[in-house]
Image 1 (tube, helix red, strand yellow):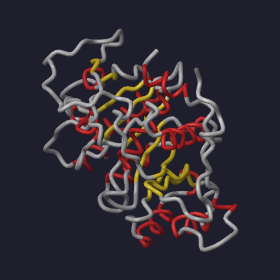
Image 2: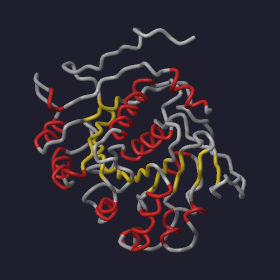
Image 3: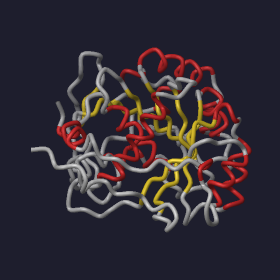
Length: 310
């Protein structure tokens, strides 16, 4: 059993708050939450700002040394690579260094697992760049992969500005672009993480073709059908909404979208437009990224209530 999973089990009884827009009764509500409530969104999950810590966020910190040309293969033929995220990156916070954030992503995981629509292929997007959608996609996939008997694939669908591979310290190719252009098979492009064996990654890859043309193809639709059969969940990091056509093409074949907003960054007009763009039956929820505690809804801290496990 991995060190990440052991660390998460160590904090099994920790509790954090889940924000429900329907229960906001005092003070001026957050603009993003108010807009969400207006179109019928039932739930918003708030992710606190990352807490700097001397730990390694659950994965090995490194300067990204060169990796061997040939990686070992698992029994399904996928390459196996160790995730090597920088300690400064707020990804995979499941080693106990940031317990509040880890618990927030566990709440997101629970909501996904118990959602009435039973989504398997989920797009992660945002109203604009810099809202934190990629970090959220990585951490949702990581939280799901901590469950036993699941196989999770994290897909870098942002072919124009791919960042999952560099954030996790793995090779960016071959990847999705090579699969869609027929240069390699899905089996050749997927990487299983050594640190978290249930987590698999399909990086963006490299292409000179227009990404919209690749995503508006039979190859993309067939690939998603294959992902449904081979994985329990596929989390797709999409482009921001409304900037290019890529998001619409990804959203069309996914079961739903999780929208990421950042209170100190997301423009309110872009937020409202994004909420109106997504069909209500496909909006799975909203994540408020890097949200500061508000005096009327300050996160309750129960960590001191529960004794540490011996």
